[in-house]
Structures are given as C-alpha cells and as structure tokens.
Image 1 (cartoon, helix red, strand yellow):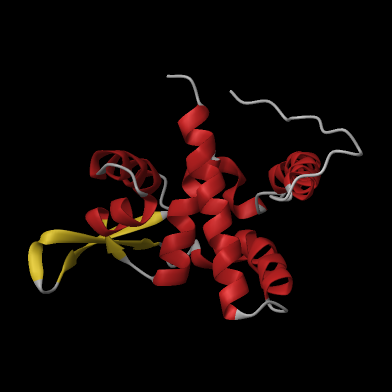
Image 2: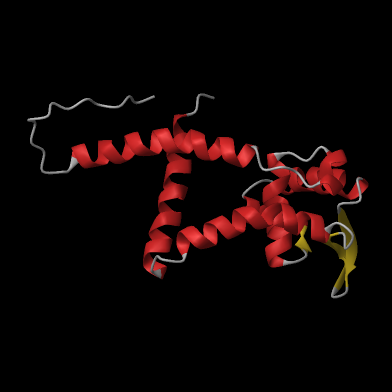
Length: 165
C-alpha cells in the first residue's frame, strides 16, 4: 500500500505533485462522508423486509434504468460471473422482487425484470442518488462528465490492485 508523501512548503515540483496531493487529501476526507451518507439512505418501508444489501443496488439500478435483460447481460454490465448474477437473481426472485420470463425470441433464455409491484419502491429508493448525481453532473460538459466517470473507474481499479489477496 502506498502512503501519502509529505512535501516541504518551499519544494518546487514541475509535475504539480502538491496539487495532486491536495486533491488526494480532499478526496480522502470526502469519500468516507459520502459513503456514510449513502449508507444512511433509508430503504423504503415496502422493501425493508427483504434484507437488501449494496450488492443488490447495482443489479436493481441496471434493471430500473435499462429495463429487463438476461442473466448474461446483467453479468456483463456488473462485471461479475453469470453464476454470481444467477444467485442474486434467484434470491430476489424468491422474495418477489424480480420476475423471470421466457424470451419470446429464444424460449431457452430467461429475461429478468423488476416485479411490477416492486418497481415504485425501488425507483423511490434509487431516486435520491440519481437526482444528486444529475445535479452534480449537469453543470459539466459531456467531456468533463466522461473524465469524472473515467477517474472514478481508475480509482476503483487502483484500489482493487492494492487490496491484499
């Protein structure tokens, strides 16, 4: 694991290391606050009995925003193995949160979607986060938004590279 480097106030560096360190410091202070606020987002009453976890949020988000899809499509979006998605889908299907139906084009395939009765509660649960991201991203240009998303993806990859295991 790398550690933050301290710099003397008079130290000159053409690569703007001090600026990067200032940004790192700001983000190290910001990220725990953001994570704490996200964790405090209340699960709607209609969903509280289902023991939903953060791993369910991404799956439900894809289905809410992109509509029904196959297990393999979900696995590709979530960047996990299809067996992992199958387990999540099976659990959520048993609880009545998701529905499986035959694909009209290929009856061997199953299409996964949010159960109609659960759609409003799931949309309400995800709406505050989506609204906050829209407000934060709206002032940016499309290129700036892409840099922001790419930066978060690069951070995720870097953190994954540093995790023991």
